[in-house]
Length: 396
Image 1: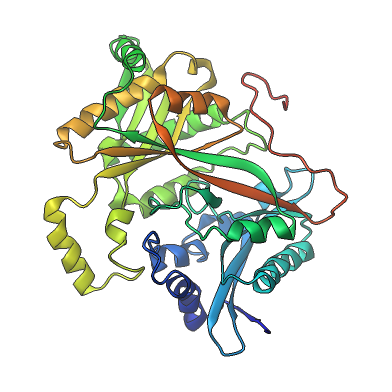
Image 2: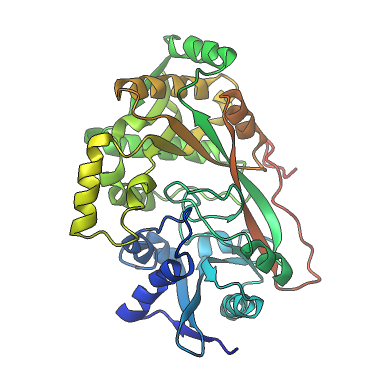
């Protein structure tokens, strides 16, 4: 069967790009459709600051009968692309019927577009933005995903690996049951840190947002400095993203730790809005909003997702993470035990120290995603993402 790719460049094709998921996942009880507006925003230069240092394109795929059978996007983040041995672009938002020819045509199209722009490799499936959303292929834990986490059928894995993609790193998400007490040792460390007068903990507030943004950047740039291909965070991007998610935020779910007045750590958590979004099928209307309002009396959200946590290198052995959880737990109690579960997502296999923190909380395995890399030259030397070495810029 012949398949036709159409570039997304108008209102009709933008709508079709989002419709692909509704067509392919119809009847899948685990699927929660992302909001169309959120997907459109990623590809809107007026709303995504990544367009100031990159470019993106997307396509839909139709069958000979005109049926929607797939979609994909390709993009280049120039701040990252040239930090690798092979200049590396990205592909994502891949969806396809269970047909290898169709899947390979989508991959071929991304590869050709990236090669034309000097790329020698591509990662996927990833996002044209930060890695807290729409990043990685789900390979284990086929359950309803939390807000921003990718969901896909199991057969996608075979497509990627048969085409030549190789795992670049694995992303493990653990689930923390908040109805059960933390391990005693973890909580003793948390209590000790929280009661140390040299440390203080404050949650985010919009009145002091500029201060907290500056503190976030200071901690992030220090904590991530030894990550492979690190680039400092852009303040304008952070401010823009914070504004976009303002209506979704619970300020008391975002905590900062200070040693005296020096910012040393942060933890960012959001309610799992997919517990609400699942009623919208990607497009809220008056009826679905009314339904959610009525169900809201029973408190729809009972789980949260920690999307990012960072601690300055010097303080990474002091138990500061435990202190952040200590203060987060007090907030959860004040919400009358509405929230029962915390998702810790995600930690890469290149970050053993964060893996140990997840284990120390008593969290249990929930799911695994994989970020794949394809080298366009099959003779080029392939290497997985290297494990972090703390306190040195040398690669392991």
